[in-house]
Length: 327
Ligand SMILES: [Mn+2]
Image (cartoon, rainbow, N blue to C red):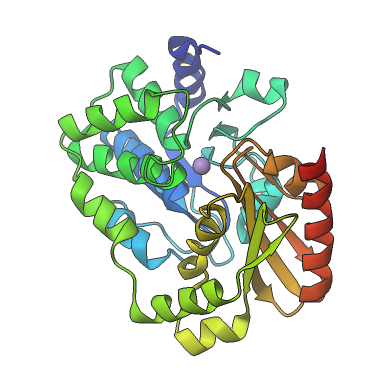
């Protein structure tokens, strides 16, 4: 599906109108796409004369702090920063706004969404939502290009983080080479690709190695070994001195085993409450499974939150995956 980026860019320009103070927010469990995209947009808008602040519902994981520091986000306590325009980045579901939900929903300021998650057509009509884009960083790159806005080196680095994160360092690129072309262009524009890569992929703590060891030890197989899964408990995070982002790689391991079609990992967020991350690398649509548990995402990467005892949650998921794999 081809996108008319001039038309998309016009939506953003008309939203910006004569606004002066913009509040940029992203989703809970802040990630490389949400953080990188927010920073790239904030730097660009500030240079175009807007007052900008960024808030993320949750702490910034270690490996994204270098890019966050280009335009530091502000922790939100009880009140939103002054704003006459609100831009929601990489998130089209109010539930995913987490602790910011009340402030965002309660804001009287006009709202604009820039995202790449599947959304109903009416939402795409009023906002810039591109489900065929690999990341919100890619959406922003196209918008900046269509508007002729310059891509300074820090903006290019922030967009690099966004694209690298959501494509698993360009490994999820298939069929559409656009993320690769954009990556090349960002490097040409002076993005510090090597530093962004290093922070993202090569700066694990020793505690994180121990956390991964525990997760790898627990990998189990089901559905004739076409499904692999594992889990990480709250006790593991404490024992390994880790933050929840430190467990995010584990789900890729479940899915990167010969013969495995889909993988999932349970991460205990609170007693009896699990975040389930799902990955597929051979066409099994995990967003449909996530949807069945009240979550969502993309066909190759999705998540949901499920309450219950670990064994029960695992059994329900294995059942659901088994049905999909049979079909
Ligand atoms: Mn994203």
